[in-house]
Image: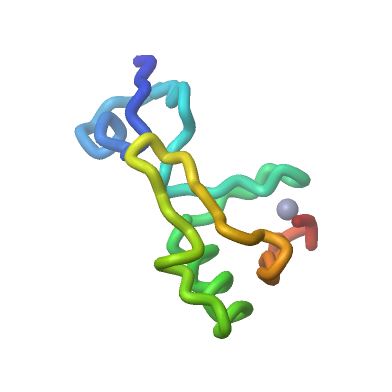
Length: 86
Ligand SMILES: [Zn+2]
């Protein structure tokens, strides 16, 4: 199945072999090693590393899964816990 959904709806409904054309909003992939993380775990680490930033204001998740970040340079980005990549 090929889907444009980013919310994992087809996987939760039991579909297998799903190709998510626009990715998935519940998972984050390390671009260095390919390790997949739950988005919430990365969001939790981002909050821990940036207590000075109101992430609800600085980061906006659009319905299509795109993310708008106000000032990336002012934030500490968590490294991959597997390979150390960013
Ligand atoms: Zn990695």
